[in-house]
Image (tube, rainbow, N blue to C red; front, side, top):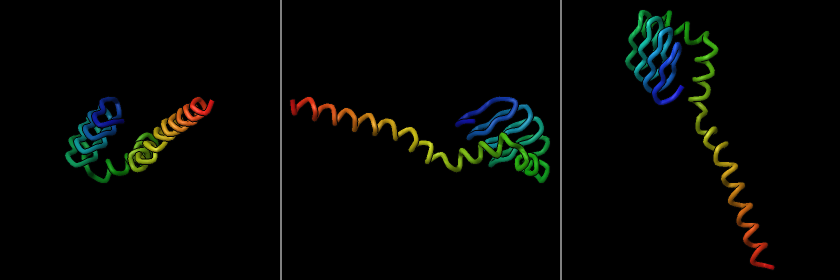
Length: 95
């Protein structure tokens, strides 16, 4: 999973896979779904059914749809560290 993804199954902006690929450009041997999909089953009902019933692709869709919240999780420790440093500097200047 990522901007560019390669593997047996792949999900990303550009996804190349042997079995299944999902993304803007999706190239796979069996199943592909995306803006430009190339596979034996590309953007058809069989591919759609495969992706809807795949645990891997369900998780990657969930992550992609909620990725803004993941950025917040990264920001929380940074903000906590900045607050701790500011408190430490205040304590140091008061003594």
